[in-house]
Image 1 (tube, one colour):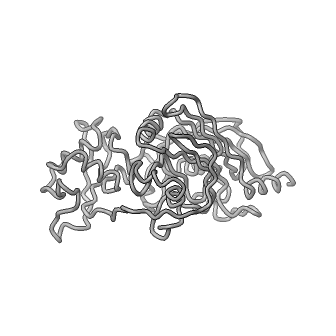
Image 2 (tube, helix red, strand yellow; image 1 turned 90 degrees about the vertical axis):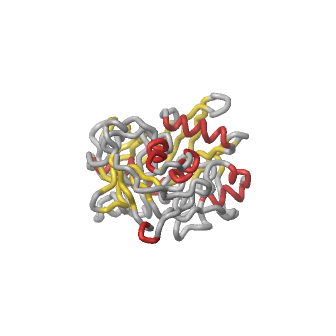
Image 3 (cartoon, one colour; image 1 turned 90 degrees about the horizontal axis):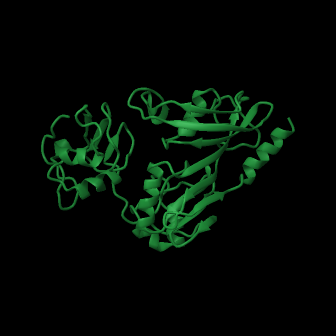
Length: 329
């Protein structure tokens, strides 16, 4: 690990305190065998001493620290060969997300958590071009107290779904629940099952895809199966039904990598139907205007009572109509 050149952040505020010539730089550090197993926040704190650990954790949460090109939690255990990037120009922090009354389908709610059936086309949290029409905007209008849970940009969110993926999304209603659910996610006690229609007839009735996922070196906005700066990824699948040119799968990702299901299914030659990024460009399925991927089931222990929750969301009408057309072929 190379030593930092100087102190770049003000300990009191966590805001940048760099000279003009240092701004907009990304510093990269490769983790050596001696640092392997160390928590990400402790590793970064050494780089940015005397910045406090709490301030470092805020930087990690805000996206100013990346591991192999991706955001990780402060407690992420580093591995030899990991590349830690520290963004010396902090991203603009979203401090106030406006509540907006948007349609929400609440599948389950109690004093500790709620589960939403997210509609396809809805962005989960604010991003450029989507500042006031996201699920977070809707959640803050529905339950304003969520603003005090987790980060201001992603209040209460335990996980995410892609914009065009529909289905179940878990939200914590207080900090204790968020911490417990995040820990369950790390320990893989939260089981998420998806329905995916893929191109082609999958010959195996069930199987497991084990292939590491990392950033595509040719396009950093995409993910791919690669051994370079990647992380282990494991996806289980089971055939629900075979059609003439497609297969309906039940898919359970054991790990939670970005675009994992889409990347893994593409890697074995059966991409998700309608996927504009990882699917074949020449594939067209009448009536399908988005990727056929739906988060259909969540099974988890309740973060406070320990009772097993099993929640389901049926296929939305647009995807169900596609299956009905396939039955006629």
